Figure 1: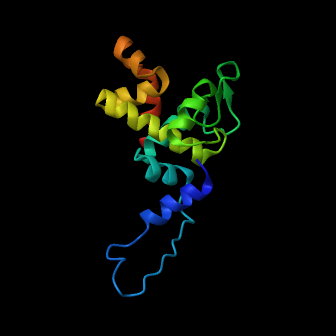
Figure 2 (figure 1 turned 120 degrees about the vertical axis):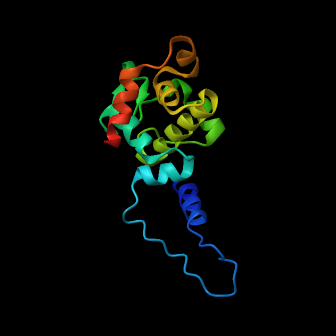
Length: 151
């Protein structure tokens, strides 16, 4: 996903109610307090705390992290083997860019939530996959690590 797409999403989300009125409306938005998690949350629908928790659990929030023998990249440890299919589905992204990777991580979580129906299983499926959770149940230590950022 490119920066212009992210900017367009934010611009649309920032339109005030009644913006089609005759009165002049300023479209200036102060994004100084917005984080990559805020942007990714708004773009994907995933709660901000879940994104923070996944980033912490996966890489201690390190954008330069590489795991699984070089297969997993960035803060959200997105596996490169799935890059082409995710890019075809949701748009091209850089797994080392915290905002772009956060949007993809949020979309993965939301897809997991839709398939599994509850927060804990959706979190576990980020690590295990939907099939892994259905077959083996949620890995509780991972769920607790992700949820630990809420406290």
